[in-house]
Image 1 (cartoon, rainbow, N blue to C red):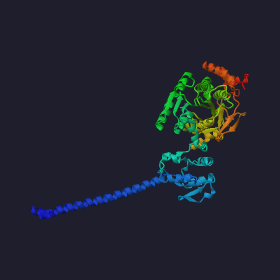
Image 2: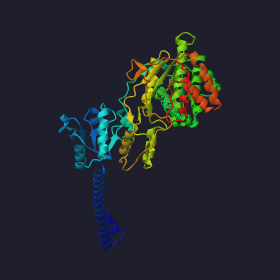
Image 3: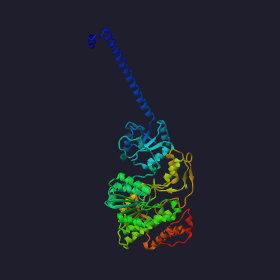
Image 4: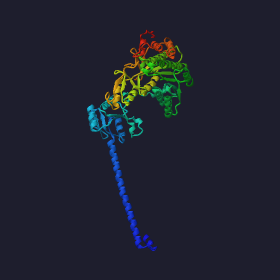
Length: 552
């Protein structure tokens, strides 16, 4: 049709043929080029994909999953499509599971270091990943130390509840920390009992920005049952931070952060007058032993007089219950800090006695909780060791024989809240702290977990016991016994309380002397109030040679 049209309008036949041949050849070249180019691009893309996949497979970290329980298998499935880790099998110490498969992956039985070493070499293993939710903490801990002894990495997965999808992000797989090894089996939650205690009430937490106080307010906020939560602390920035956290996580919570000091009676009276708290959790305290040994008057003003101020106002404003948070350093104290906490225990218990015996008509219940070191607290030995390892060492340990109890902050706070539901009057609750741990062993294990060799890559230096420091901590004095409670990890210490009339003069003296910063006289009166307080490695040892009146 086109040709006929062109001829009709006078265009020559030869020219038309030339045009047709030209455009035909042009389109042929174009189509051929596109075909060749497309094929080349497809081949290049396929090669890139295959190469990239092969490279990823080559660079993936080969790992074993510990255990063959349901949560271990679930963990393996979660990691199936992970871009950084490749599961090559399961490992266990159960001989009966050997030579079996789960989900097409082999189960390896590990008897000892030699088996693990051979397996790691055969499969070019990077490490072993442990499910967080497991029933074999002690077995897991031993196995982790075995891994670290041959420089095999150990990883911990988040709990199932912390995983938002079945595909687990590599960032959620964390290297195992020393805290994970010191953890104990999870305590049974007593949410219902604690809620019953706190529902519809105004709760005041002193020291709310500290390690224990901040966790207490988080746990209380999570219960979503209190009428109002009042936070009291003298540390402005940490208090601001905990406020921001709570406002974000619990926007409907009635929250009042108040800056103030437990030494100030007027500030505390304003606090009680404004909010009329019904439950008071008293966590405000100075806690660092060497620092308080150098500043004994401040230790007395905060730990003793501050507690007295809170307790007196609890009586004056008919608070239902005051829970004082104490420490195992109050048992047979060898330092000012421990003695100041014991003096605070004595005062709180004496007020409870006044009510229990009918001397005072008020109904306030006074109780004390006592426990040891908590993991991850500000200024803890673990944080110190972590910094020293990051700096390349050395790690400083005071004495090779020093032992301490450890408990996680969430566990300690959960037990505090549970103990408050058990309380009747003037009781001191002690927590089951588990086994003691040698600090030097703790240091060595932290070095290994960081991928180094103790005393080879990172040195351990012994510096000698610090003023007031003990070799061993105690939760009970030698003359103290315990009664059981309905909660396994909480006991009641049977301690003969001192009568209020016998001791009140000593608190008045402590207030006067510590305000004047009369250091020796302040410590002398503290020793009279706490007869079992014997200074160790301290400038105050000379005062122990002075005869003291027996207050008991």
